[in-house]
Length: 579
Ligand SMILES: *Cc1c(COP(=O)(O)O)cnc(C)c1O
Image 1 (cartoon, rainbow, N blue to C red):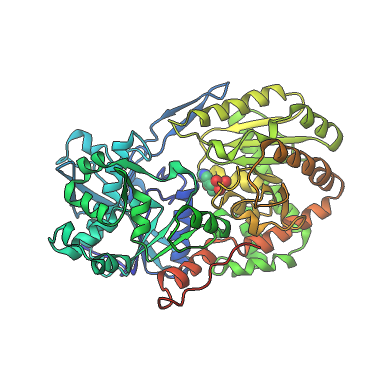
Image 2 (tube, rainbow, N blue to C red):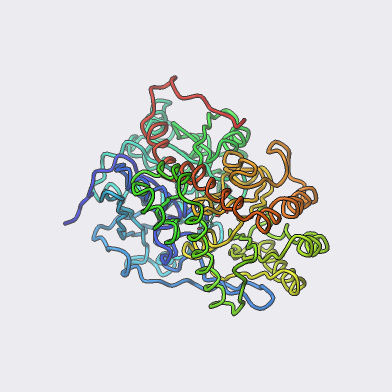
């Protein structure tokens, strides 16, 4: 049956990580999950699209935490055969002067009406390669800069070659999801040049590539943007291709910047929330960066209890997430019951893995995301005395944490240990559990099963954030710093509560901790314990207002109209700043 492009794809979507299934460890966190949700929504909407990523045979890593919260990492070995179809086609890509041979495995994402989006996972583990090259596609974000650079060459240049070999020759738009796939622009340019040298590249050549590429930037954090010394680039990419990268303006002061390469070749660039669009415009002066706010794939993230509730009351919600708006008409009692079921399931899972029996009637706070500095996982524990007083006066509290620290992120490791230490210190007042191995299944259970979703990133570093959207879909309100998507999703007392009062100013740990405590003490705890019907009303409006909007179907229909199928040049929609 091969070569077989399946549905002809008009859009190729490139991402270093894609969360296709919880048990396929081909993602590390929000970026990969977002990529998976984007493809699931594209399939729902019938968008002719194909995804490209790496196989990651050893996954991101398996997280182990000891009694003090010290994280150790082990390979997450899995069987591609169990999930994927091996394809016969082989391509090769030149790395450090060697031909590295690649194969691809195919996953089909099936939409609600049966439309299929193929995803190709590139794999260098072939007998013709050197032992070291065979491991290049093993570990997601593993190894040092050299390994990362090789992976990026495989993704961009190898991915483009594989798409062609598989018969996807009519791609109109190449979507670079984050800068990691930026080398694909070099492949496109090279094909157009047909052997002409970098010195002969004209503006028209660059423009011809630019017409086909779009770019989504995902983070204002510097570590999210890969740079390499020019000599390293030349060694691995080769001098001819490196000169093409320089010709495009991606080299400055002897340093190559992959994000700048992607940006230079993008006919459209966008950030992932309105605020992040603004921040990105400051970060990339001279580029027109618009914004499309992220969303989550509703049918993937609704817990079974809520999916059944929606099926009963809003039967078309899977086809069209806009119907979630009518959650406003669902009897509150049914919201309360569905949530109780999700909470019971979560607490049962917590008891099964930790032995800790949390209480069904206690306000349960959730915090699950990558353990990295700017997310400030320990903010809730910055004043233990105050936290004790709040609980004594306002009622009991319990907290569920999860999240992995990148193996090389020492401060991320320390954050987890700090939470374990706080949990021990608070043992008699607030029960705190930290669950190992944050994956999509655990993320869904936590987002749906807690009573309050806590998020306190350092402004303005949360480009969007998506876990609060997963919570909202399940009726769980957020208590969050005004950054990323929450600037748009927050209506005080209707969809949740803010930490701090504005989004413009930078973060102040002490002031935000005080605001967090104040909101807990004077607003959230009294509402939860004294006015449960009012709390349920917040849960319901959270689904109706935020579930109906912050979903991936809305997001992808915006990509379709504003990015994949743009209006004629000069007629682009205005860039809207948050109010
Ligand atoms: C949704 C998700 C995230 C994203 O969390 P944020 O709070 O948006 O950073 C990270 N990891 C996993 C496993 C997720 O499912």
